[in-house]
Image (cartoon, rainbow, N blue to C red; front, side, top):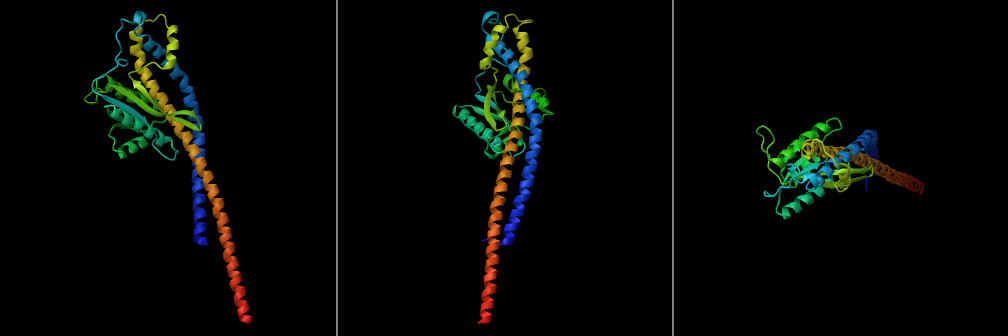
Length: 304
């Protein structure tokens, strides 16, 4: 059984840990306000752009668009049996199951694709995703550190350029060789609310209209300067926008998950301190009682 000094040391250690988790929780709470404003402010633009581009894509093959050429980013590819997955995680841990959930979901997708006979190439965004995949024996083609709210747009543009090059030709400017792929997916945590982050794996390329986009088709009866010109300009922007939305959701989700995890850790520390203090008091009282009994027993022996 632990002596009183060991119990005191442990209580002190847990109290110090609680100070750290409480501070991290307060920092996360302060950062969460800005992140929430960013993700909710960016969603209307991203959703509207998706609707407009999705309606253009959905209208191809009907009406006056039947004779127009298919844009490379929406043309279905087949032949090399290779898919790319952009895995978006965080650089740091201490965020509950935030990283683990999306990592496991992505690993299941990789296994399914390989069961179907497809080769999988990975682009990781965030150190936790890279570490998980490399530890599991998965090869990472490209890696990027997790974005912040300040450099999010720049990183989304760079990664979008990479995956579009992989989908359309397998090269990215200069002499950098990239493998050609038939499909591109992106995996991220969707920020639903402070307590809920949902792992999602969605198709990025070929760019496809989402379910709600078809409703917008009737709002675009006349197109100037033409569907091809609009798609040529808007499709790369839409690809970047989807990655930006994923980054916004991932950043907000990470901060929210860390706040929840640190709150839970602080509560657990408080409960442990309470239990250890009670145990310490009992042990101290037992030691005092034992010492008194020894003194009384010695005194009685002297009298006898």
